[in-house]
Length: 213
Image (cartoon, helix red, strand yellow):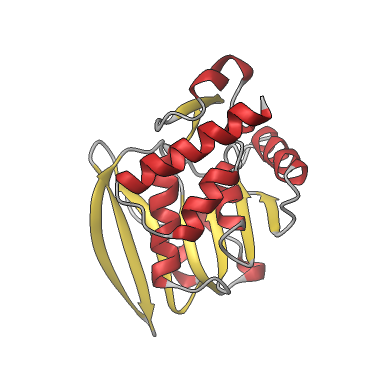
């Protein structure tokens, strides 16, 4: 399995390069990360396809291209030393890629079962620079603010104000925004102003308020 996974992960990284991902740091993280560990056993045969997959409880593991794209954008717009807040830990796959590209990640997940599973997976991969919290993602993580970068892995109708308030000066927030039609949006903080840019069309599960055990 180890040999097969390494070959499959490298092939996935090559596919993402062909689709426009250019950050070598991101491509290396994709190639080194065993995505099959982040999905249910019955879906492992699909784990290195460039597609989103269900992980239970109404959630998904994002398409690898989108994971790579959002990570690459953060690297372009911030720096590897930036403190990153992730809203929506989910399976932990996006966390794993971020952890290999930035010094420290703070990740919030509203569903406790998913958070514990993700924490276990990251520990098995010796990724210990991710601090996790079970809480309402709409509220961010005020105790560790401000953040140089915030990445939201579920779509809200509008960006939660609490997240904007937790951006550092010149910080960047990346989030899918919209209901039936969603777009990836980049927001930069400049003092008390926020400059937003609409990027490509995307499709994510909804960003639900509240936390559940």
